[in-house]
Image (tube, rainbow over all chains, first blue to last red; front, side, top):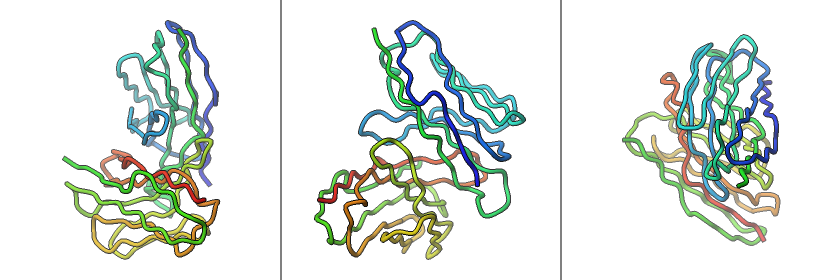
Length: 115
Length: 113
């Protein structure tokens, strides 16, 4: 069974600071996704990482994937209040088997950015 | 472009009443369709997924059911709601092989009273 673990689960940051959210998963995968969820809202896709060593950046967020370590990171640079949200990583197992095509989500990281 | 519609946005239902939530996708054909539930406290649980008309796979035992009467329509139902069915229900679609992951609908917040 594929397991996905995020840490930290809660993150309180000051504006202007940097921090990293980690996403570990338990089985072979080359597809990892990051989503953002604002309170009471649906999930918004942030990044799609499809290969080992993939790095994507959008504004103050940068995501990377290390398939050998089964680890993805979401790095926040110079945080601003607008980044306050819950961030989820999600993993799809490699092709084949009955789990193919189904995403398993991490628990989510609640990020709060303070002035 | 592809869009996903989900309704209603909010629903308050008494225990024991039936449920029907609908999700439709536009702009793509033969999508994979999914129902997720998010209970208070964040975690997303996959309830059902479908790879084609009439093909439904259930991930967890429960008093919910799903149907896919048309290629781009996915329905979540219950004959008798329980208090534990309260939560945020999200429909999602994907066309696997393109690596796009899931695109989520706007969600339905269900409160069973």
